[in-house]
Amino acid sequence: MLKNGFYTADKTYNKLMHMNYDTGKIEGVANFAIIGGTRTAGKTVGWAIKMIELLEKGENFMILSRYKNDIDAGYLQAWWEGKIFTVNDADGIIQNFLNNNEITFDKKTMKVNGEVRCYAEAISMSAKVKNYGGPYNNCRNIIIDEAAQAGEADLIIEGRPALSRIVEIRDTVARGYENAKLLCNVIFIMNISEEENWLYKSFELKINKKTKFTVQKGVIIEVTNNINQKEEYDATPFGQVVKNLTVLNSYYKAGYENEYQDNRAFIKKQPLNFNSLRMQILINGSYIGLFRGVEGLHCAIITRDDRSEIITSDNNYYDESVTFSDGIWDVVLRDYYKAGKLTFQDLKTKNLMLTFLRIS
Image 1 (cartoon, rainbow, N blue to C red):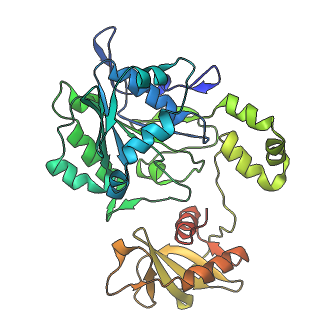
Image 2: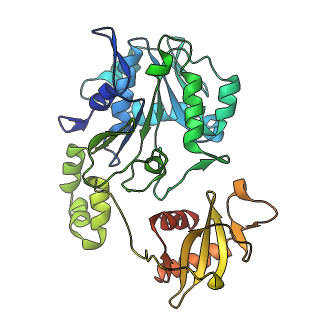
Image 3: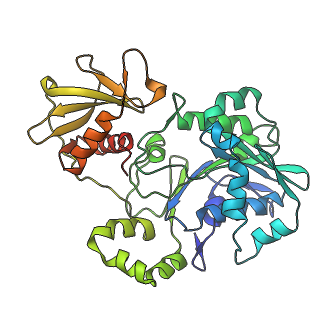
């Protein structure tokens, strides 16, 4: 939701399960929320402001990173000091919080005046969180920032779907306070504009270009932007060039107008001739077959076929039956793609291949 041209978390938060402190009643309809839209739209700051307001009511919350290395490198402190404490919001909430409290950090906690108020854990460590984590006192919201990246049609972390690990952490956190199972929410924040990404796929959601705010299958979806930021960008000479050039039109619409990208270039559904199967690439648990064609190579998700070589660049899937990629095929296939000689059976196949080729 926008307030005076800037993002505020209020609309989505009011749909999440929460305690109404004015009435003393539990309200809301969902425990999951996905907030997407333009970068610099203020989504992360808006949710940080909401969390600060809830800290003052005695609630605590958690920040989730993807991997333990992020936590060890100081992800929690970097999130607060790099993304939040540098902002001077219109109502002064962030700076008042910063200036009127003693705030200290270690790798997994932020303390306010000596009391732990914000936790940090890694999705990859869900099993250890379940067995050894906590207690997470009155922790009612879990925020995952930069939750989805461009081209991620699936997200497997340490051999398991990311969502299963996130739910495992949520169920561990939702303990030890009244109505914990009902009041603990997971909030995903992302900056991408793609109709197919691992979050929408995992939750089996149907999103289109017109989606702005909806609730599907117990999940709130909000797509937002920052009107003021867009207007400032449009007013610059650089912004005018980006806005008006045909070649940059899709970038501008995705980045500043929230138009979802459904890039179906080079997608050509066709019958598969397994006599022309050249090789397979194992990507995020899916086998992509590369088939020889008249104009180049055609890619399609298939069931594993032992009649051709299988390669991967992911240590999580490497075993004696799979060859670890030495990077040669990456280069060859990028050249095919740039030359327009690489086609795809469907959008999921394309997203997986572009992830493997590190093209976004």
